[in-house]
Length: 130
Image 1 (cartoon, rainbow, N blue to C red):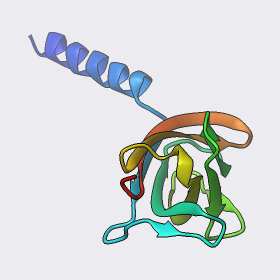
Image 2: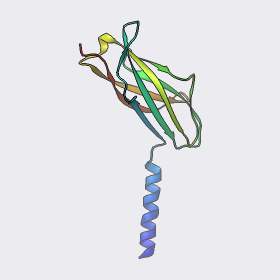
Image 3: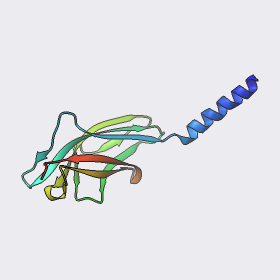
Image 4: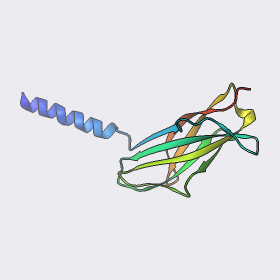
């Protein structure tokens, strides 16, 4: 009976290791911040990105916006995610005011690692109610 239990536990561990994600990505608007209006008539939000790398490789991270005129400005020159490490950084996303409907917009951010897509994350962009 112990061999059956041991075999079941090994099978479960193998299943869990094979189905886990290599990366975890969380993007949230910075706490306590609202939108800002830029001098160019755009609305900006400050976001915080948390990345966890569960692989044995370092990654140069780039952020791209899908299907939107939003732009991303990083707070640092380059995002580097170390192997088996974490990265926590802030960035500013800007969106033209005429693209915000009912005070908010859902935008998909594509996280690229060494030029390849790692994950897609949906974020809520807030702005004025027009």
